[in-house]
Length: 260
Image (tube, rainbow, N blue to C red; front, side, top):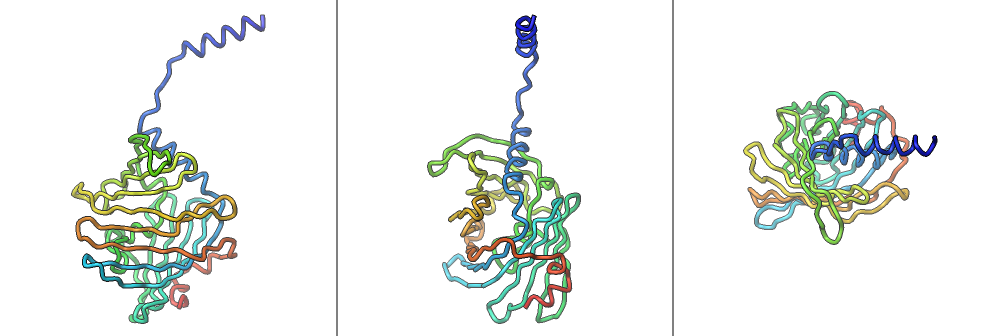
């Protein structure tokens, strides 16, 4: 009786229709799995150096520090503060992410002693002269995009998924972002950004990953190249620390003026 039941159940399973995973379903699944593997970091701080490189190769260096909290429901917060050059010391960007609406961003300009909110339609603009936009800095959420798996590929000896993400916001500066994602640990190695005219605008390469707390991967360098202007920006990240006991009061608009 038991054997017949098992055989009968197996026959039903084999006879059931098989619904193939669509590229869109697979893309969303990979994005969700990647988000899950990176959860649990709580808070962190880093020291950063941003190197602006013009099309002639001349460099301008800016030094910054950042701190961030993960949040419990896609409501994380991040504060970036400039320490140099002297004329930009104290300039600060505060970002609040939200699960159900566009992120909020505020910029503090010490020369004006003024906190300015970045409008949604202005977030596609450059972040203080760099090839990163406010949108790039703002912290992307799964809900901000529709996804599509394109293909599997080998990249520098590692198997990766090539994915496309389509921004939902009408104010995004991009029509799509193509990413190369490690199939083993979901690290992103490269991203291509396509502008509103559907032209390839920028390429970012991500280098020097280091694993912290035996769980969280963080890169040492982000290199963003603007293919249309010939300019580029390197973001070098050092001294990353976790468990800094950061609190909500560290990420208020008033905290921007005290960030210096």
